[in-house]
Length: 254
Image (cartoon, rainbow, N blue to C red; front, side, top):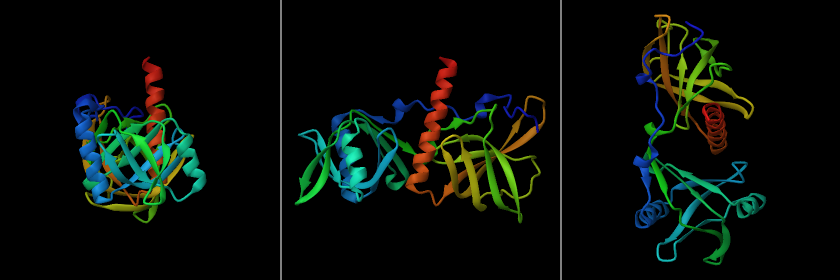
């Protein structure tokens, strides 16, 4: 395979999303959507302090008239304090597979049913993405990222990443006839070094396969994989890494 794994036809590549198509901007729609999340008790991850801290919580109540919502107090008091001190906070959850994400401002402490809770102004907008619509970004060609698969046909193999998102990643196979990586196949001993942030250790499941023609005329196989057993700290690491790549990309084109 060529050292430059870029297909001739870019139409086959994942494109950046026009997020406006997936954005709720009406206060009534936002309040209704968040009320549904609160009603069904979906878990919500709140990333605070520029992603350095996070808590797992549930939305408690949405007050449309007052323009505020409350959510549960976290388990760790030090982290709760970091959330209270954070001026920008990102809320993420996936009710019924629909990823919901929004940014909120300063959070305050209140009392709900004689227990501490958080309160915040309703966000100006909420992004709703189907799981297949997670924002993807290509990994850099100059410093390729590799997924080490320890349980590939009773041996280990390192595959280069094409792109990565919170919903999954795409890997280049060394050849179109590479054995394994059938649809639905799982590999449980995988690790990816997301420099300089840390190592992601998890399992993957093959979800699709795509043949791409390279600039030198050769064909290569790309497989799309979803994550298995993804934990909130892993989500944080992936989100931070995607954000890092996006900042680097904007710096290069800007």
